[in-house]
Image 1 (cartoon, protein in one colour):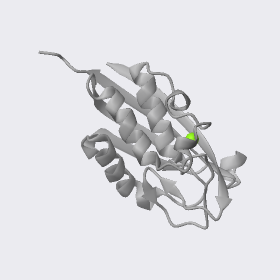
Image 2: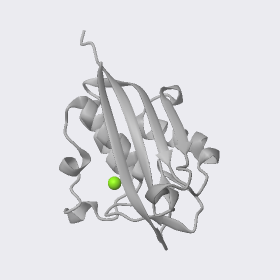
Image 3: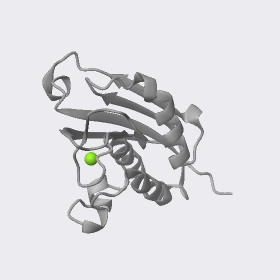
Length: 159
Ligand code: MG
């Protein structure tokens, strides 16, 4: 078994779509980023790479590379899975999204389904939590959204 942790932050700005875990969430602001700013998928990618001992998202998909400008983070998650799937099974994934607004609780089910499909695993292996920050800090002041993810990988037994 190998465990990995991931964390990411993106700034909220007007005139962008808000995409979290591959799910579009109706809101008057979205997340700024070189890619589509999907903060949850970025944290999850770092957790997967960390568990596999493969570095981090910036090494695999550098934000200096024009190839990744505006890219759909769902594709990055699929590419990340391709890096680990021959050697590991995903045992389980646990995530926390921290956002004062919008309230993300109603979207937890959709986000779980989205991630399960992208990762090719059962929804029972994924847990999503949505928290507010009680008005404190940059998340509490609605300047940004952050996400944490933990992934447990199980090495495949070769027969
Ligand atoms: Mg990011």
